[in-house]
Image (cartoon, rainbow, N blue to C red; front, top):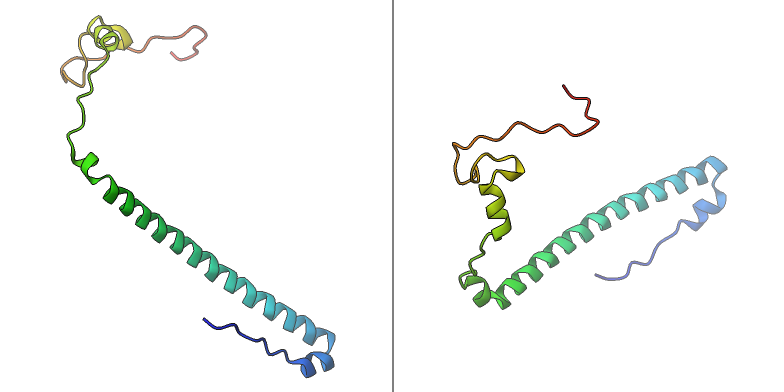
Length: 115
């Protein structure tokens, strides 16, 4: 990309009327606004492409770690026991494990106006 040397219409601007100068100014400002929109779109596209490339690089660098089996995560005992004893609005067990286990009706809080 080469630097563009602006060619100003000096003679026109020197001899232009006030409305002519205002028209020239508005035309240049409009053109500048369109260029700004194009630049913004290009910057957004550049950021997106760079982010995708960086993500690909990170995945490439951590491929072995990501393909290894993830360690088993065990549900905390306190949550498991609370679900078994009917806390948190459950009758028995965890409804995500037992689809037939219905939820208890919602408890009303002090100051509730709902019927």
